[in-house]
Structure formats: C-alpha cells, structure tokens
Amino acid sequence: MQEETEDIKWLEEEPEETLSVNPRKFILWLFIVSIVMLFASFTSAYLVRRAEGNWLEFTVPAVFGYSTVVLLVSSLTMHWAYFAAKKDNFNALRIAISITFALGMVFLYMQFQGWVELVRNNVYFVGNPAGSFIYVFTGMHGFHLISGLVVLVFALVAAYRFRIHAKALDQIQIATTYWHFLDALWLYLYFFLLYFH
Image 1 (cartoon, rainbow, N blue to C red):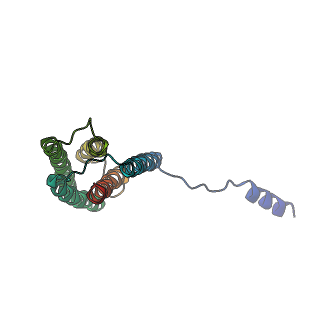
Image 2 (image 1 turned 90 degrees about the vertical axis):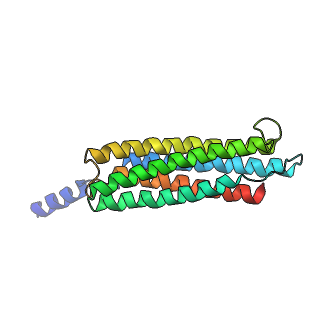
C-alpha cells in the first residue's frame, strides 16, 4: 500500500510537458506580424486619403511588373535551397542561396529604376499624397528586402560552415519563411497599387 502511494505521489509530481518554440522562429513570426500590421495601416491610410480627393492618377511603372517576376523566381530558388539542405546537398544549397541573393539585388535595382520612371512621369515623394504613398510602400518594402538579403548572407555563411544540413534546418527554414513572406508582401502591394492607383 505504501509503495502504491509513493508511485502515485511520484506521478503527481512529474512536471507537465511544455510545448517548446524555437526562440528565433518565434521572433521571426512576431516580426512578420508587425510588418503585416504596418503595411495594413499604410494601405488603409492610402484608401482613406484617396477617397478624400485631390489625388494624382498615375501609371504604375512597368518595371514593377518585371521585378515581380524576378521576385517570384527568387522564391523558387529559395525553396530549392531548402530542399537541398534537407538532402544534405551542400553545393546546391550554396548555389541556390547565392542565386536568390543575386535575384534580390536585381529586384532592388529594378525598384530603383521604377522610381526613376516615376520621377520622369512627374510623380514625386513630395507634392501629391499619391506619389508619397507609392514611394513609402516601395521604399519600406525595399528596406525589409535588404533585411532579407542580410538573412541570406548569414545563411550562406552557415552553409559554407556546414551548419545547415538535414539535422539542422532551423536557419534555412527561417530564411525561407522570411523570403517567401517578403515575396507575398510585394505581390500584395503590387496588385493593390495596380487596382487602386
């Protein structure tokens, strides 16, 4: 009887299992949520201000469409990097991250060319609110894309040091998730601007 009571007491004292979350993944998702809230407030403000009138009608630069394709291709190469890491294909992993980085740089260059086209069409940051908003949207996305490029650099360094492999996928998962999010965010902004310009 005493043994049974000791067993029951031991079972009662056993700590409950807690669900553990990788702190870096948790921070990433907090960051993503904050970016979503930021851009949701930007687009809401855009719609409210547009409805008030005195709004400059402009054509969204064609180069933004081409840069969208570049970013979509970069999502494919980023996913290739993730699958390469799962299979311990280190050469493919490094090549895929490098290509993704290069495509990200091409995207930024094309965004800059879009700004040049806007200026050529007399759409400026200062002046009509329509111009201010498009520069804020694309500029803020560009800033976050640069942070994505920094994440890629860290992933590439880790890949060369063999710190990313089939049994250590956290870093490549974080990089992939963030990159796909940035792509999805740009798609949202691009089609928003096309529809509501």
